[in-house]
Amino acid sequence: MIVGLMGYGGAGKSTAAQWLREAHGFQSPHIGLPIKNMLRSLLRDADVPANLIERYVDGDLKRTVVPELGVTATEAKQRLGTEWGRKAIREDLWLSIWLGKVDSILAAGGRVVSESVRFPNEYAALRERGALIIEIRRPGFEGVNGHESEAVPGVADCVVVNDGGIGRLGEAVDDLVRAWATLPRYFSLNHVTV
Image (cartoon, rainbow, N blue to C red; front, side):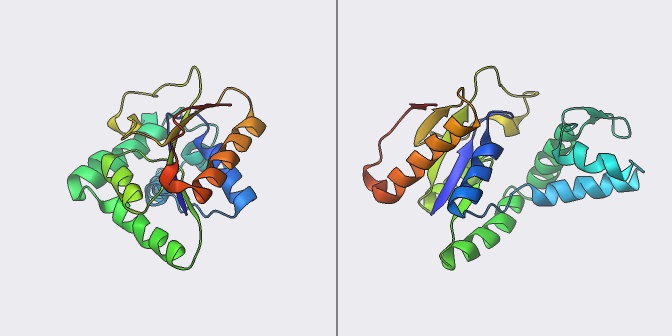
């Protein structure tokens, strides 16, 4: 089984993915891991203090300007991923690396959650693999800076409105995963509010 999560930054995608890992044994190789690793290396080379690097890359400072770069870590990851990786190298660079990991997990009978579906080719690859695609919306959370990687790339099988706390978000995700596992061909839930 494979689940794809879509939505703006701060909507609850990472929380939902964590829930699936902890409650259902999903694995979540992150499509952006090579990009994060590139940024970590750049920040080390720019002599950013080691105790700040993780906070910039994937923590509480990711939307704070990194003085050594002049942009936020989020913007740096977007530009590395899109302008460099997708446009300068090849459109499916990150996707092909990620799919190698995902297909191995699925072939071994594992379950996968894609924490952040951002582009049409990622959406299409998930659809080809029979994924349940969930869009998570959280009132007051929109795109960070209008970058093209913030768009929702397709129509979700269902929408979860995350306005009821972590426990309620987890319960909604649990219900959707159980329903999909039982009746994927007949799945027609369009909107779930938690």
